[in-house]
Length: 164
Image (cartoon, rainbow, N blue to C red; front, side, top):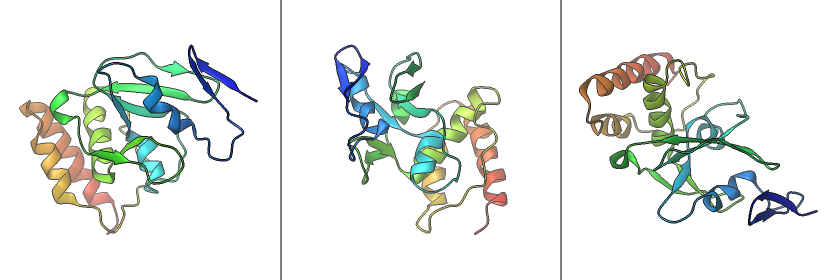
């Protein structure tokens, strides 16, 4: 009935209010922080139909992936000046999630830095309130010119392919 997630952390997976996403804030200690993003957040926002096998978490520090009985958590470090653009999830669980724009930005950002990772998104459906202006603001916050240009190019290509 009770499952050990890791040392000192237990969960009741059969409880109707349980979500593996709710474990995310409890995976950090001290000054470490993280929020759900990338394809995990895109799925929770209803922007993609594919349910990811890994719960992707953006973090302030480099961490190894964590496989537990309740979920597989993949951690991705992001530079501190880009650690923003998230808030509380309004569904089951108490965790922070990237806004739709930030989740897409994080995905494009990592796709330019990690080889082919996240470079092929499933069919994307943007919410009515999605802001391309906000996407541009995130891109402009990237300090390294070649990286900013690469993310902007991927954003332009994506925008052309997404139905409006």
